[in-house]
Length: 268
Image (cartoon, rainbow, N blue to C red; front, side):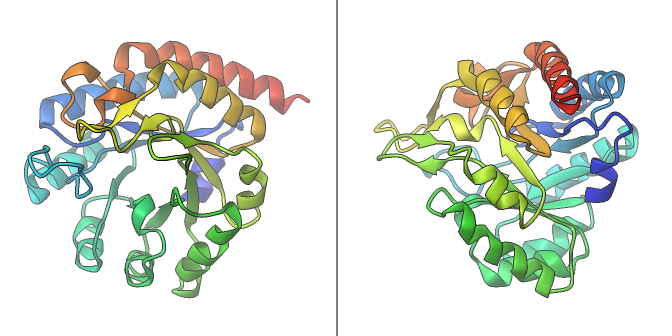
């Protein structure tokens, strides 16, 4: 899968994008269709992102999903109708094989990136494995997470940078870590979760979405292989992570500017 994503004739970055969580079929298909048209025009290899369940929520009354199989079937429909790969998070060993029947990429959440059994289970499905760097780990430490996947017989693995804990309620991206992690695997920059303001006293995560383009531009300039971002038709009513999402209407202009930047850097 990674070889396909990185083999774009335009040598552009690849993109993982979609809603935080699958809220229903209509919203997922609308988001996917919108981004497919843009990425085809810009020669951006595209993977649709959507969680079938949110297992890590601040409050017990937070929305977690519409049902695992129902959401996974929607992801499969996106893949089949638009002929694009899809990615989703898994949270336990048992979920690896289940999700692998519907998606092309299994994503390991940041808080679970050191869970050996989970990494091995994901690797053994044969699907591409995207490991989100824990907010508590150094870039150098991600070598060992990658090696767990490779030692289990799967070389199709990537690392996603998504910020490092800075105090109690902030994250910061240390771009010195990008070239470090690129020694171990292709690197993706998550430009939405990296802008979260976690652990708010209200129990709902905040965010700084006005900095998404700043972070994305810096990532492209630092040589990331791909970008990850969450988007929604109306982030204000999104059922998860709305505070740090990019409004869907803004994604076209952003991707146009980032592609232009990437092409300029490629000429240097």
